[in-house]
Image (tube, rainbow, N blue to C red; front, side):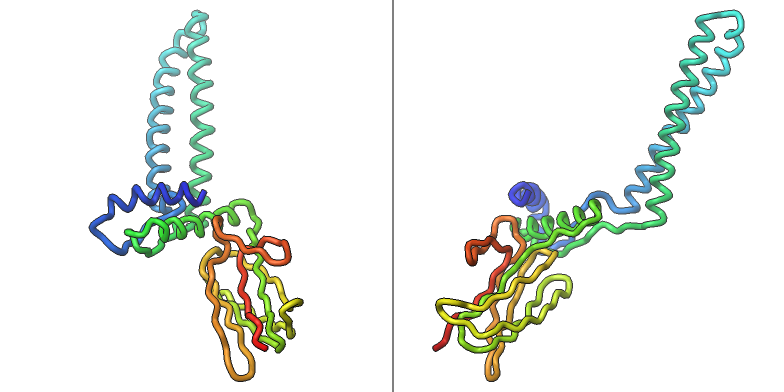
Length: 229
């Protein structure tokens, strides 16, 4: 999906070549656009129903003594029932949209960088998938400490993500480590702190083409404090 997104946004970039930074919408039409489309469809369907009513009225006058007229009258009513059912469905969608008023995501990125735009697209698609399936995609990260002293690690990332984790002393042969979970793909920073210093480590987390291996297990993010003896 990530590479398909790159292809999609590369086409978008060519159309936006005169602008370096731009906002673009992801996740389909905006609520206003969707309402406009639904209203247009409803208007056409209601006109079709009115035309069917006119035809039905003409055939009804002959249906008592004419088998063909009766057949046409029944066919028209059947078509009308289908249209009325579709109108009811669209009306329900419109009402739900008006109640929920779900906004399309708007993201500001460098339009000359297709990878940045593809990343933004991927991030929103993950969130959209979580919402539509009523479940949360979870990524697993790991913090590793090879140094023989206690480390307090603060992990920060997109969406205000913040976790503070304490790692026990480690060694070159047996590091201490701790897993944690996150939901939004992006750049994450782990700051390893001790009594008189700190070291930040920033890496990509949750990207479809990025993975890290520790103890034979694949992680979506890994930050390591090397040993100092």
